[in-house]
Amino acid sequence: MKAPERASLLKTLQARFEKNMHRHPDTAWSSVEARLLASPGKLQSLQEMENTGGEPDVVGAATKSGEVLFCDCAAESPSGRRSTCYDAAALNARKENKPEHNAMDMAAAMDISILTEAQYRELQEFEEFDTKTSSWVATPADIRKLGGALFCDRRYGKVFVYHNGAQSYYAARGFRGALRV
Image (spheres, rainbow, N blue to C red):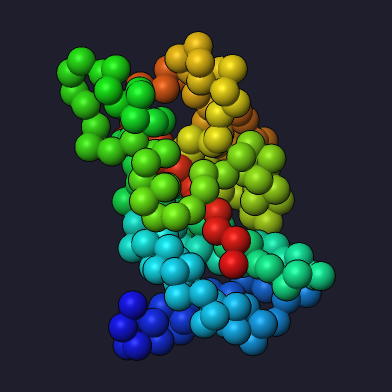
């Protein structure tokens, strides 16, 4: 990442960080920035999260290690990551109307992880997300082996977890990612 791009991304992340202190009340931007500058590859992942509409922000910090957790905090599932089936096997199983991408490979290419159900529920403690969209979440192997995959959303003031065939895709379903720095 070139210096002007890095500076622009850091400015965006800092502004979002300062605007949303309720997500990380005990974390200082200076410590986050130092970790980011020491990990250029992580900055590239955050840029990809930003480019696809994720609006990444710090949602947790490990006090001993200093590690911080970034998560997509866009109000709805990131727009640049929607209309994806769950994984490559699901994409390959589709005979017609294949989407362009699958969530797991997109996440891997961005060097981020798809939120687990637990992480998704923790994110929802900060504010309401996915009130009009839904997001794939990491699916246990036993469910995936049977052809299914899990997704979550928030409706009626509650977080719901559902199942669907992993090969399904919808314009309003994407995925949220997490990145440890």
